[in-house]
Image (tube, rainbow, N blue to C red; front, side, top):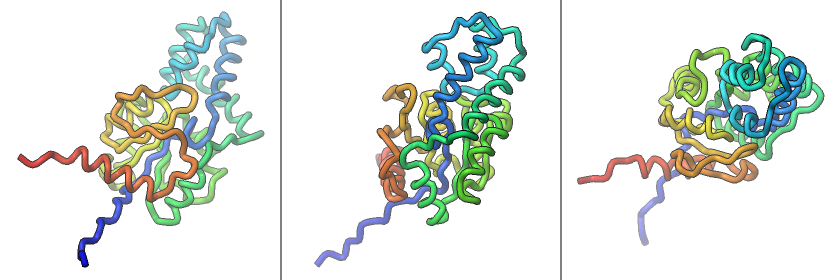
Length: 236
């Protein structure tokens, strides 16, 4: 009889969650509000190509892009606040949760795996979503107005890991956009990409999943083990 015991899968030190498109399917709300702002304050020249360009972007950077390409007569902060007002109004009427996200978040909480929300939405919108979840779902929230450099820079994920007292390289990040995936990968997080509004190129260094529906803590642990094995230097 063999005495060999299979090693237990490695539960991540923490899980760092994107919000829009990952936990909540609010991207359509943002799109509606972009068109509204352009129609009311610009020349109305907006398109799906512009929409896709902004998915996952820092809000001030997105506002600057809208001002340039939509010929807006507003300042960046005014644009951001108009977008936030519109999206928050829609969220108050209905929160469109993404499949499997709340269930995985609840299981992580049950197993005492720390979770952080890492979003480029500003705090006043992020708090509206956090308030709709069970208390304590997130140990910390890093919002777009908390960092000088947003996604695709690594800063938001590095700040989240630092607040949790863990190494970003030991964390799993869950994202839905190329911009977000680039940010998490740049921070050396073990990054899962679950595409929503736009596809994620296959060469960004992430683990692709079609959905979070049915994904468990055990699933994340197996992903951690797989990525850790590929990162480990081979012996000479």
